[in-house]
Length: 385
Image (cartoon, rainbow, N blue to C red; front, side):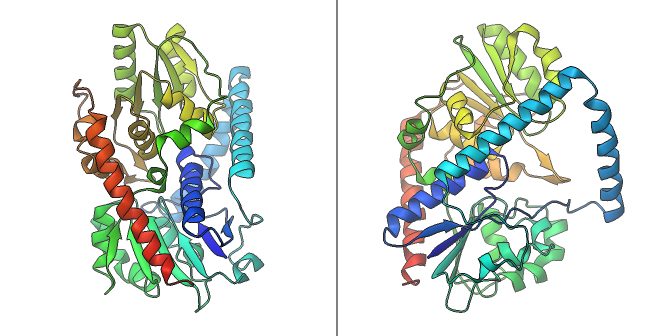
């Protein structure tokens, strides 16, 4: 039995689709083995640069703000749509992911199973918040027995902020000490981790790139679109005024609709900003996310996986930077774009290119990186049996 650990429990398209990509790839490489995703639904809840007292203050403040926000009937509709969104994620997990029963306990009996190999990754499973929490026991595979092959695939620490990472060197060094094979999603992360071990640390693709575009398109053939007119798909993790302004500019110039996907309370701001040109897409599951990207004229986003699937599905797109928990998380998008020579799709100070993307060149790069990434998995798994 091979156990996979990632953050598929989180209602985010990248989180569930990377879990699917890794699961399906391992199934092809080890067809005679049971592949199971260990459904540990916890970890990474605190901010690395915010004190415990401030976290408590913000928690109480947010509860009060939410109580006032949902007094409005339109806002209650927004909460209902978020509930529908969650149900779509649960449906995807039930249909496409082979999981254990769910737990949030680090001492669950689930971790006592006899795994020939355990693979952690991808996404920010090794971010500082997790490394410092009790959840590190799970995401650094400390539960795995001595006879279990411990593998990291495309793990990410999520930042290149050395003021944070410098202090955590002893922590990371201890946590990775008994891994058999280590690979990281970002080159900066690979360099940082490699300096803490005598093992080679590989730089590999995020699991969503292990499957081709046709595989994803086959999943969405029955998904209906919210409009027939050409549209911009605006996918934001956090509200960004520059991103919104660019969407309005492009929409007005080209007579496009704007389908916007933001799952925070700022969604109501977008309703007023876009007026009749905007179509809210709150109750969107992972398959709708894929369909909206696949059928968009242009994608605007501030997300790694929004960028990744724009590339996989051959879209014209622009990517903005982002922060999360006080940490600049733009590095992951910048490195991804550099890998495929698409640096000019990253927007700085609202300046951007209108040069069309030559996807024939990009696809060759993806094929080469995909081969190297799968070869790494083959090598790491060969020591398990």
